[in-house]
Image (cartoon, rainbow over all chains, first blue to last red; front, top):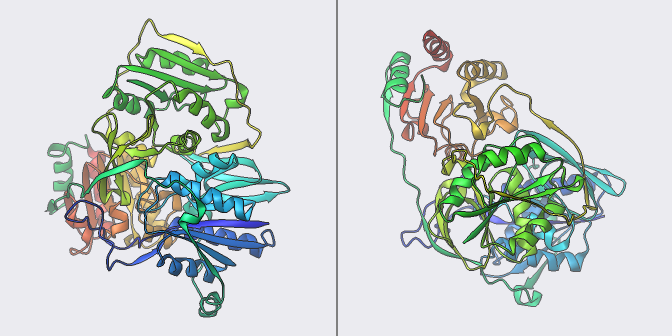
Length: 250
Length: 313
């Protein structure tokens, strides 16, 4: 079985976000970038499926500029077999991303596509669902457990208030949630080995996909800043203020 | 302008999220229809009639929609959406699962987690877990959006005595996926993303046993329980307690952070809370920079005192 994992390069989760003064976006120059954490979970799950003998080959794909090769290398060091970079300087919105991934799926014919449930930059939580819709495949979103049972995939989903289990006909699109697994640390031998693996670079024009944004970004602003409040001296004072000043408890 | 609102329900009750979505839709139009898909939907239709003063209640009641799976819900919505200018639903796991798929079928964009409506085509939504806000303008003919329920008030229940209830006869089969079962957390505690008060613990609590004490305190206040990623990583609390950029985003009336230093990733998930209380023994902890009320000290002695004070009255 062939697996395709889509990964996004984002500002590292531990880096403070600074909005540009001209309100066109957030500062990305000289900022630490890394793989979207939910996508790391998707890569890890693919590698585990390979280790269990369920998957034969893992292909990772990313859309973006040349620097994305670094992120793809990380996935290769985790255990992916080969990588594809869809080379573009334009930021693609989820619908365009889904159309691009659809083309890659048509080329590679994977049985399962894995993606993080959302990217921690744009926070859309759309691409996997859109891809499944375009392909007319089954979808398992926010997945915390995967089990292959013959020709079907049994997945457990994290839904508001609990868990839901579905049986999906293959091929399927899976989006990963936090509890699915804990991504491994990279070992030095694996990092060295990953350098030998191939990254195919495909110029986006070659795919003939319309990536015109459907949403115009008018501006990006900083949210209202919270100001520090006061330090209270005792539990009694705290309770008194919560009750009478803030009026959030009775 | 015509708006279709996709109702979230469990075939028995309407989810409270619908009332927030309705008030968001109401900001733009009085011509609102709702869609109820499921099986059997009779009690949901009945409560919807008493709750939403809409023109039409469109009902897709068939065994195929019983579990509201995305694979056949999306084409149902995409088909109906062509009669409307906008489609609204809640930014819950329900809405997030279905609406993007429906949008893709129409080759239109979807706008997630809207926190403010500027006009019929322009919306504000948070990005970077709320560390930035983006104002987006849709170029599509049909706008599909999910509403962050904490950003809009709940609309009061009202009735339109002339409401039309219309059954959708054409049923879309689902041959791709099958519902197996669900385990809903049976907890007396309110849900984290829905609670009025959240009590969260960090690594400062040091052990899972200590975390239990925090849970007991939360229960005494009728609060939901959260945790920082550090606490989850240290094994003090389960992962579904996690509040932060990689966990849940919450905005309760009162957020009490105990033994949480205030890493960026945690603050991203709770900074929209109305009132934030921080209890930490390190006076330099970054959490104090965003807390409305800070109390410096050992949680171990503070917690029992808090519990006692609250119980007193």
